[in-house]
Image (cartoon, rainbow, N blue to C red; front, side):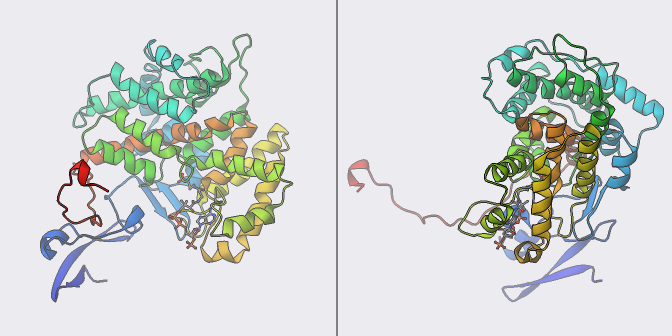
Amino acid sequence: MADKATLEFNGQKIEFPLIKGTEDEIGIDIKSLRSATGGAITIDPGFKNTGACESGITYLDGEQGILRYRGYAIEELAEKADFLEVAYLLIYGDLPNQEQLDKFNADITSHAVVDDDVKKILDAFPKSAHPMGVLSSLTSALTAFNPSSVDASSKEAMYNSTVRILGKFPVLVAWTMRKKQGLPLDYGDTSLGYVENLLKMMFKKPNEEYVHNPIIVNALDKLLILHADHEQNCSTSTVRIVGSSYAGLFASLSAGISALWGPLHGGANQAVIEMLEGIMADGGDTKKYMAKAKDKNDPFRLMGFGHRVYKNFDPRARIIKSAADEVLNDLGIEDPILEIAKGLEKEALRDEYFVERRLYPNVDFYSGIIYRAMGIPIEMFTVMFAMGRLPGWIAQWKEMRHRKEPIGRPRQIYIGENYRAFKSISERS
Ligand code: CMC
């Protein structure tokens, strides 16, 4: 393998060094492109071929369906670790020993209260507000209560901000749901595990004891782990680019939540269930919707299908599909939309259009079915994704600042008008 790439431009040969990753991925380092060519840039809409950074957090191989956090396979982590261990792994690079985990947990727990004035902000939202908008606003509002932008070069300041947001975020998640449901706000019980307490804060009725169902606790723990990081996706890139201007951690996270909200990204988990319900209400004719998805004049897309990187299968979708079967079975729930989902998957996997374009179910195709079985309202699904992605965003933000990456500022090729002389209003037609 050569160690450089050569570009012929204006009769001149320009050489660029190659950057090789630990899994033999190759990047052509074009940092000197503009100076070597006299100003030419690359154009790559959607960054389909552009690496924004070197990162040591998550490895994924879209051809082989591999996903690893800090070297550990997602299948093993989902099976054997819990969410806080995975959060620690992503943020600090190694799985914690018992002492480290206990301290991490205790420090997070000590921050699991938000300023009481946050309630006033929440109160100002109408019940109709989408929980993702509320969550993004509340996360941004935390900046007002902790105004100093974290000093990323200080280990202690970075640690404090990390445990602070990991402590407060589940409160915000639960409260966005309770607000929508008109339930009084609840702080749960920090003697419980992180995920157990999240569930209690979400579901406890004011006049009843909340009794945990271990099937639901385990399933949510697994879902959060599966969503915890996914390298340079839209929301993570947003978090990194906002942070690259030295905006604070919470402000960057709030921007990431907004990016996640869209139906082509995290919002797909809500869109999938809405689509499956729509198909069911329309008589369950999956063939009709397959045809719509393939029709270029129809904006309909099969939500939960396709991925920018995975081209054979999404390993998270495999784990979630079998978890969906297990959870529904264990809870004794028969959900007709699970059958519609399986039917659609079966048809898509043998359909030329989907096979040719290498479109497979992604993480969002079956996750909503589990959330629904847990009793989580549909508009909260993407909020649950954000809860899972939080440690990944923190890890990526921290890495970006520690690597002293320059401010993110892409270039463009201008295709607008050339110079025109100003016309006074009476001269304009
Ligand atoms: N249904 C029908 N056609 C599709 C779909 C789909 N879900 N996804 C891609 N295609 C077609 C697309 O029309 C295009 O066809 P052609 O080559 O004829 O123009 C081809 O496949 C390539 O698609 P693309 O949009 O250029 O691919 P992309 O890498 O830019 O987009 C994607 C990836 C995930 C945005 C897209 O597959 C999609 O919109 N999927 C549905 C939304 C979804 O499930 N999003 C969740 C993604 S995974 C979790 C996450 O990241 O949050």
